[in-house]
Image: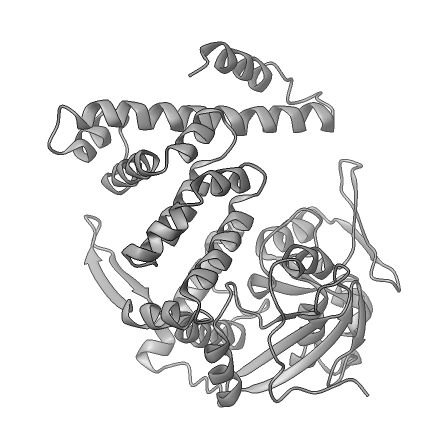
Length: 422
């Protein structure tokens, strides 16, 4: 490890004045922070490797020495073993060029493949490390999944079968008496459970029926409400009936030259064609067409006026077609975890029309209300946010960003039972 580089990065991180720094200086400090954390993580693996040569249970000693949890220590041992298996990734981590999250993505990919398939993936270890250096952990994970599909040569069906076999349910009681449950399910089942919990949460709470004992921190409050919704579903006290599952298929026609239109099924990972066909056969499929930032066509009512304070399902479909994530610039919280916010507060306009709506994550939703952010959404959906500090943020629908990322690597799947624009 280059100790001189560590000292240089420490100076860049701690040498910046947080109260007077310019945005550029803060960006440089954050970049230095990221590299420094990777270098520290690399040294941690080196220490773990040294401990492992002298201990039969290195995870336990690591947990004591670093004052971390056992689970975290075991993760460190797994990362060390991965770097021993793929030294190119260990070298990249030691240079601050990749993060521990890149290692975890590769670890997950190897765990989904059999022995022969793993060997085939690792024959390109040098290329994998090069890809990891120039991508985010999320992009690297997507690259690995594309590699898996090419290796299995069955359109991912073997992976889907393995995921179904990997369904597990674990429960335990912690020292404080709290009961904990962990359910791991395949993507198809996960989508159904996610939609059910989301519908139950919206039906029971929404924004006007929050319990007084709900946490104030937005992320914790949302987790609390989802937990209450899940309890109601398990105990049968919610009465929420979804009926036939619904899938919104987004067709974005503005893709890089030579690429087919990207079709987004609203799933967080790439799915085998056979699984998509099964999903389409059991669901009501609504197709929304977009051209980059512009909504071309969507089914249903886009303007509800004063008849409803809550965005309707047709409006949610259209917004999901335009936004892959929270509308606040730079926020990567997925659309499915966002609230639909009135850009002009409902109390002021009393209208729920598409031109006044944008998806906002729970954290930003709470802040914009509490801090009274000033928002303006023009007729081309250019969102201008003025913060109390004087900072001005400008954003546009971000579906096209995801389209560009996926358009070069993901082939379009057929639209089943969909609708075409008139």
